[in-house]
Length: 159
Image 1 (tube, rainbow, N blue to C red):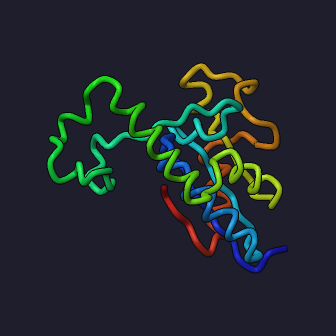
Image 2 (image 1 turned 30 degrees about the vertical axis):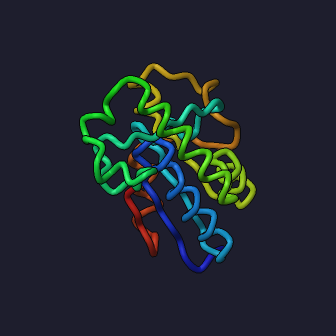
């Protein structure tokens, strides 16, 4: 039994928000923590077999833009058709050039490290999803399941 416990609630399903729960939980597991991540609402997308994660500069003023676009390109311009696809392509290309693991690789690492990943059953039902949509090796539960664990955790994070 691990000396320390990490509990994370993952609520976002975009490319940029996929990294924190997987990086933090896999790192915690490597450090000997028991780690559990509860994926709810849009965060549940991170457990799907086929990931189609996007990133958007819209509503994300801290996102660095190429060619210093954040200094001269109007924020409203990021809502133009095709901008989300372009930003996602550019982010994936940049991550690859820097040797950053993919979300799928990090997710697999978490499974190998025995990070317990729980899909929110209420969210599955709410969005009419099927358990066949999700990767193997995860569990399903609700707020009671997560709180039963988080109540004893040394570190609890909401992402």
